[in-house]
Amino acid sequence: MSLQPSAATKVDRTSTTPFLLRLFWRQSRALEPYEFSVTPPADTSNITDYTSLLPSSIRQQSVQIYTWPTCTLAELTGLLTSVLPEGVLPTPAVGTRLVYRLVFPDTRSVNGDSGRGRWIDRVLGSVVVGGAREAVSDAVMDVEGEDAAANGDGKHNLEGDAEKTLADARFVIGDYVVCTIYPPTADGRVAPLPPARGAREPYAPPRGGPRENGFGPPRGGGGYRGRGGGGGFGAPPPRGEWRRGQRLPDYDVGGGYRGGGRPY
Image (cartoon, rainbow, N blue to C red; front, side):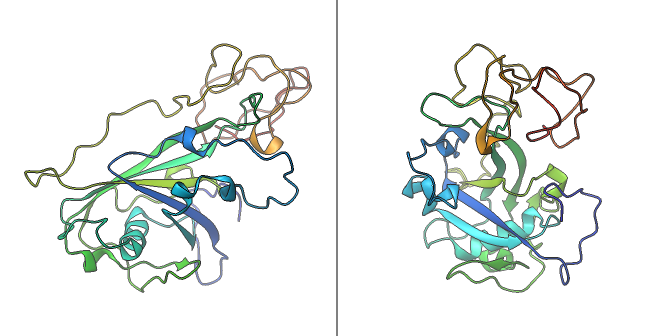
């Protein structure tokens, strides 16, 4: 399976190995990308999982899932609502809005002096619970650890982007998914969507002046995971129109961009 499966790719879940997805959640206030940017320890030889570096307050509100690119927001919602601690969802849960976003490292940014990378986010979708909690607690996937997923189609009593898949959102294996849980308002109405913002709005930007389309200024060094441009020069934006998830043109600019890093 490629790191970025196409939305058009047919996946046989009985024969295709699932990948690990980390889903983080928070009530009423969104998890911001900068919260995932941490200073690595001096010795990283024993660090096998970046998630272990995150603050415990973030790690404790997360679920580890084995799933496929065809996983829908309905399935994620079914799984999440089935393992949330008591009291997180109102009773009844009708009218609760769950807003999902992708959070991932900007592999084309330049790390700061502290070694912290730059993280960005992208809208994945939103669903509204329209039925009893038991009706949305089915999910066809496996959960790592003590959590267990029930069997079912995970598509009942949800409104919004329930049928949207990870692949539809140009998900790349390794991305985090974050979910913000908004209970109904005091008068019982569904909470409105949070204000829209640019898909590539910067968080904790590195020094060195403004950025254009996520490409760094002409400085040395690479981004998170060491896959940024090298040779002492940042990459200029690729020619023509492009979007995250699309393959960018391969061309050299003094040792900078050559198809390396993550295509945005």
